[in-house]
Image (tube, rainbow, N blue to C red; front, side, top):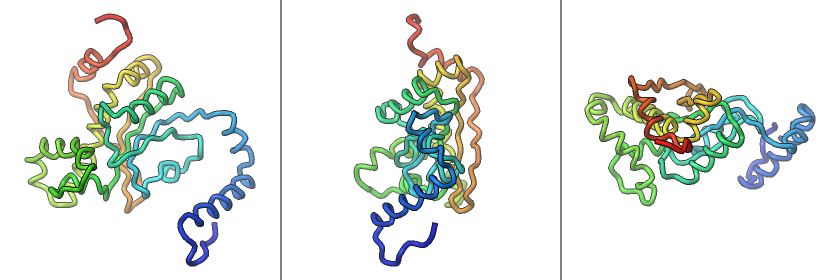
Length: 220
């Protein structure tokens, strides 16, 4: 795609960029749009941050139709978030994705805010799970430099999100019934690379999670 005319505003660039992309796609992948119009069959549910620098389809080299997506500030999974819960249920129970990927990223504004003590506004309530992780990791964080503290909280937030996902009844059912897998990753904005985050379970943890959170069996 060529350069945009100087002075063109952001919305005009959006429309002209779509025209260019559409024409390019029709030429180089003519079956894409007719195929997508018949339905979607993504294999991956991506739960990520709203940050404009982390567009999931772009950074993975995939196409429209490949990834089912939900994004929010700092890729936080609140167990009571009905928006995220609805997306997870639909993607797992109805679309039938094979993988759920929770993606954090470096230089995350939400993480930086949670590591500070400034009052921001309504987002302060949204960031409470990050502050809880910060409190839990106080001793660890006190021994780290500024950059390392940010990286620690980014990764710990991903691990916590994976824990929440593992306790989702739809995820439990699909994991046991058809092998659905949950992954945690971090995207390095400066390098453009994805790194998988280890999210181990302690001995007996998954059994306890299933015992407490699995529903729909009609018994105890």
